[in-house]
Length: 260
Image (cartoon, rainbow, N blue to C red; front, side, top):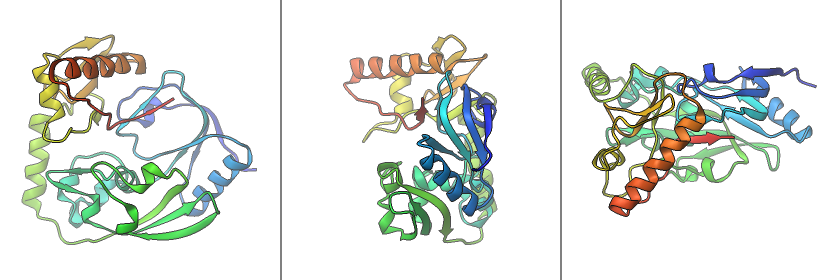
């Protein structure tokens, strides 16, 4: 039996700095240990969740009654290798592929060559090409098929344009609340709309519930202003969706993952 840590507080592993404890916790430093941890969880009928860089994630105040497996390669390691748009984005390469992360009109689907996966269903390791990944806007086959666990990613690399990196970092500094804990963009942009603009036009910029606030800098960010709870954030999410739909008849859908 693999040795898992127990009752580990998760807030320090997320960019939101919110969340209860994991019943079990394991850091997988290799592909082999990741596969073994998943197999052990399955054998014990234990729910599990793969945690990357902890961005785009809201963990409930009650924590997670299963196994959290922390793993992944930092996305920042590719900023100098052609992914200028990823400058300043926390998270892992694997997580970025899972959600087809992107910015400035580019995304992971533009650079992914192959993805090595572990298929829980048949216990086999498989290689998927770009087309197999079924990338869409902030979407992929990995979101739809929970049996496919990303082990590694092969990316098309090139030398980055340093001026572009500086430009993107300055853009984020000026237009995103980088000085406070957040999960990044809370909602996907609906077709032909900007989620942030809709939230702002709905008059919600700066709105607070408990320790959470809709950012004054970018309305599609909810920030942890002062010891916010997951419930504070969920209340703001509910308020945003209801208000935006009431005013504009546009349904906002979460980009962040909410883990109970």
